[in-house]
Image (cartoon, rainbow, N blue to C red; front, side):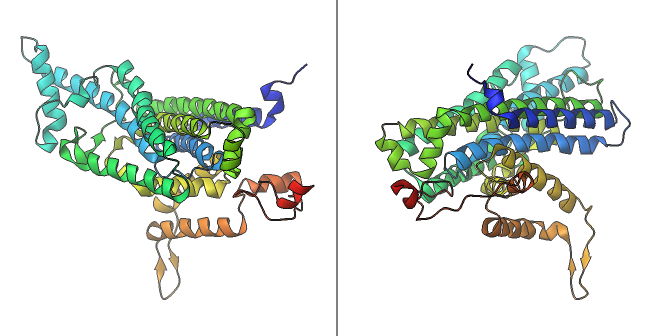
Length: 409
């Protein structure tokens, strides 16, 4: 009998089990459903961290397994947040307008829309609802746009780039340029998304006024954990079969895979589009927990941070991406949230809020130089695994690629 997917990949079950235990543990320690040991703000932080772990999986698929260093995936993350944020802000504003209208006669649909537009866009000096908000009143439509807008953008961009066979650092620069262009466009007030003000009040879920933030934070934690579990399962399924072997081959030696008759551009385009959609779903869950989104969230530096998380965790291993994102996110919260005490050196006081970026960059350099497998490499140490001694010059850019001596043998 042919072994099933889960029997060949026991690490998937281990990950799902750990995620389930973690989610239940936080629930029973939360203020809403447990002892209250974990505060509501911390539950939100943990929920957001799970969303960051999901986009880290997407980054690992495109970079760790396919070899494409994308510096633009946080743009898709932000677009997912904007799509769901438009409905949240529109529906919430509609409730406020209707509750404040104390007149005897009900408002006409046009009056209601004008009032909503004034409330939302008055901050940028506008009073009309832009065309991009035409579907904002429909939750199913906006949820569909969470997938469609980033997916179409990634497909078009990827098709143009991969068809032109742009690779390496040039492709990374192009993805960064796309992110910068999108961010600069959204900073403009006439973009239809409130410019630098962004979308705010996203933590207030329409129709759930009677539910407190303590319960909502746990609900979002559950949904984020479910999304992360499904995302991990899908990614593991992709990389464990023939498809995974092909994209690893593209990473190690693209020319040889093309010579063997595989459509390299097709594989790249599929992975690029799929990971963009995964990143958008992560963003759609993240920003209602954050409460606000603005174009600064989509700046190129955010995508660079994403690459750092995956590198620190260990690229080319899905659980490594999760560990890296979770570790950096929680440590960053501790350092930048004022919890880490200042370090007095006598001649200078190190304030970690100011020095966290330097510390993160230094960690990236140290991991790259001395621990290329990242934190995930610790798993090998626990299991007593050692890399085999290999001779000859590598025939591909990855540490796992074939060596000349092995090819001869």
